Amino acid sequence: MTRPFRFGVNLLDAAPAAAWRAKCRRAEELGYDVILVPDHLGMVAPFPALVAAAEATERPRLGTFVLNAGFWNPTLLAREVATTDALTGGRLELGLGTGYVPAEHETAGLPYGSPRERVDHLSRTVRELDRLLGSQEHEPRPLQPRVPLLIGANGDRMLRLAAEHADIAAFPGARPGSAPGALEPLTANELDERVARYRGLAAGRAEAAELNLLIQLVTITDDPEPVLKPLLERQPQLTTETALELPIVLVGRLEDVVARVRALRERFGFSYLTVVEPSMEAFAPVMERLREESA
Image 1: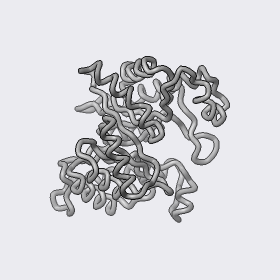
Image 2: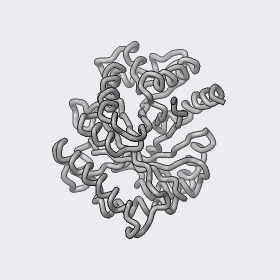
Image 3: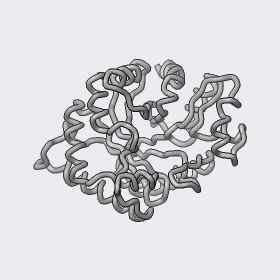
């Protein structure tokens, strides 16, 4: 059975209280189902930002996209999760990942570790959160019986972890690049292979997870070349044609972008799409058109 679409926006820019609340209300007005925040130094602290978002809105779910597990002690994180879920009225969705920016760990005075060490720490964090939040003796208690868990995954061990534990498997549509903290987009065929790998690992699940894709660029335009120029400068291996084919890029006429979103669900199974804050307004007519079609 085809899952209905859900759409989230990842809010990247810090703002004073009134401006932050206004931005969250605008996301709700535009029709976003989920308001999300990342976990990077120089951006908002995730949990207080989500509590403020809950105070400003009524309908959207609220999530971390995604927490850098290396920043967090699992016991202290369980307290944050339970408190935030209670204060947001049970609207929290918890997104977790390993982190990918070594400089942030250095600035925070925290070890970055090898890829294996980072995945090991995330795995311990997931299991400890399950144990603590699943115990009726843990205080404080979350409002939801289970806070939905999203795991951002691309490598094989992360895909296995997501297959075993995640309610939402989130695909970044990119891999670590040659420079520390840089990302290189996956082609559609490469993403096909990653999704197929996940599906194989998740074949024994009692209930299928929701699949999420992070969209990096959305622009409605008849002239994509100027929009794509900064991307092509950062990714010289791409051409205009190959950039337009990337799953994480939605650039073109409205009807073409709407068709691309439908194709992402049909080909890969992505029913939950997240856009980044600079694309929040641009993606709104796409959501509106898709909802009109399904009404």
